Amino acid sequence: MRVADLTMRPAKLSDAAFVADMETAIRPQDPRDPVTLEDYWRNPEEKVTIERFIGEIGGVPVAFAVHRHDAWERAPKRYAGIAGDLVPSHRTAARLDAIFAAMEERSRADGARTFTTWCWEDDALRVGVVTKRGYREERRQRFWELDLFAERAKLEATAAEMRAKMREQKIRVLTVDRDTDPDKWKKLWQMSEEAIHDIPTTVPYSGTSFDDFMKWMRSPGLHEDRIWIARDGDAILGVSILSYPPKRGVVATDWTGVARVGRGRGVARALKYETVMQAIGLGVDKVRTDNDFKNTPILHINETMGYRRRSDGIQFMRNA
Image 1 (cartoon, helix red, strand yellow):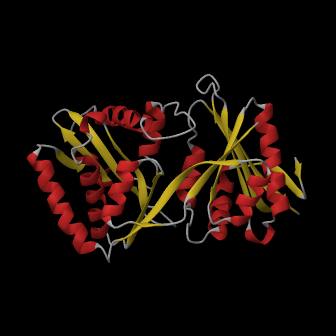
Image 2 (spheres, rainbow, N blue to C red):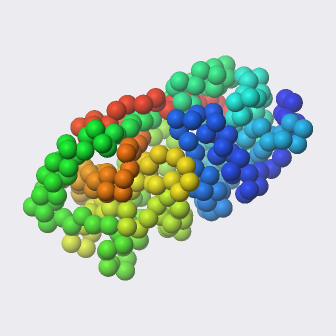
Image 3 (cartoon, rainbow, N blue to C red):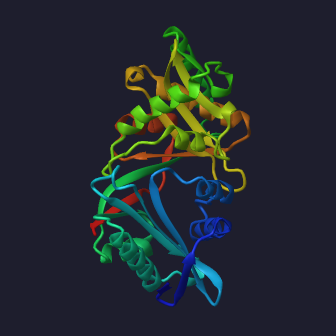
């Protein structure tokens, strides 16, 4: 497939390292880990269509393009994600525009009705390309960073307070490897599904199978002794997880969620404090997190913990 002066070929699993290097070169402040990316490619989600391409010039990889969507029977509104980029030396508006046009064409032919894509708010080139293509801002993702060294004393003090608050309510906070319940993973999956359905979104959440959930929980950046859960008797009330990139990147929240019955009890805050206190003990100097811009409760927790705002991610959309 020819796209501008690029020859596009289907991506192979071994190309994940190139894509991680490309994304890191474009945005060094947000390095992409090649190990976790390759694992994600190796373990595709069920009932999802994904086409990935590598763009070459003279046989040398210089670009990446992808479009994806849930199986249409699970996503009747037919939203489809479009993405792509180039190494900095070849990153021009004309090439990026051509990549988006090609992915839109393939996605439209596959039945998409609405295209969605994400850009960093400070990526003027990419934002310019997608807005000229008719995309309009739909929502934002807030990104944050917490300096664990600078905030350590305050974090330790509040962590002690949250532990006392959990004890008062007879809520146990522990890592999942220490939980002896044989049904813990099923309960954690069910609790997570409930929590994810309540996150503000435009693209409807179509659900995650238990098998896909376990692929996620076994990804290289996650460790059972670093997955924190809260239990009230037989029920799992919440979870918070930091992902530790095996090769390159910044430790960041992978998921924090609380069951409806557990909200308003300080569970999310208690769990997040345990994750950062553990990170401090492991010698981590900073952690990052991100949340939908309308997820008020978790945004408030981030602010009070001492997280500082970084650039937003912007979700853009246009009709197919």
